[in-house]
Image 1 (tube, one colour):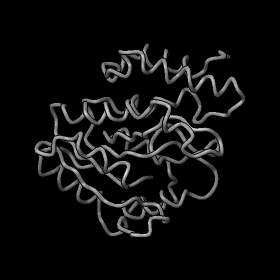
Image 2 (image 1 turned 45 degrees about the vertical axis):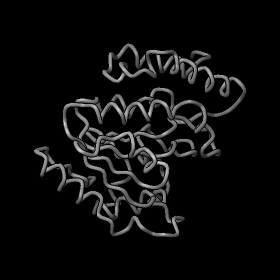
Image 3 (image 1 turned 135 degrees about the vertical axis):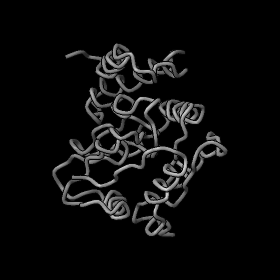
Image 4 (image 1 turned 30 degrees about the horizontal axis):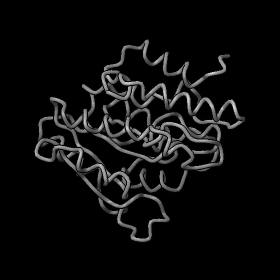
Length: 229
C-alpha cells in the first residue's frame, strides 16, 4: 500500500478521464496540495475517512453532463465505515444518522432500505460535500483544507452547463453558494438544514424533493425517483 493514499486516489481519478478534471482545482495544483495535506495527517497517525478509493466518488458517479440535481453536504460521517463518498449517504451498520432520517422521511423513502444514496447519484444527483475527507471522531476536521474550492467550482460548472438543473440548498453553508448559480437558468430550492439540532425546524414539510421534480418536469427534464429500495 502506498504511503500517500490520497495522492494515489487522486492519480487514479485522473486516469479515469472524468470531465470534472477540467475544473481549475485539478488543473492548477490545488488538488495535489490538498492531497498532500491530508496525506501528511495520515502519516502523522490520523485515520482519514472515507476509504481513499471513495474520496472522489461523488464526481465519479455523476459526470457534469448528467447532473439534474445538486445536494451539498458538509463533510463525510466521522465514524469509520459509515461514509461512502456521497453527501449524506450512509452505509454503516448502525442506526441511520438523525439528519438522514429526516431527509428520507421528506423524500417519502423507505428507511428500511438503508441510507446508501448511490441510486440518487446514478440518476444525476450530485451529492457533494464541502470537504471530501474527515478524520475519525473529528467532524469538520478538514473543512479548511482547500476542498471548498472544488465544491465552489463544481457548483459553478453545473451552473454554466448547457442543461438546466435544480440545486437543493440546505442550511447556511449550502445556501451561501446560491450566488454561484445562474437563477435565470436553474432552479434553487432553499431550506433549513435537516439536522434535528436545527431549532428553526424549517426542513420538515418544505417538500424539497417534490418541488425539485416539479421544476425538472417543467423544464423538460426527467424527474428523479427519490425512493430507495
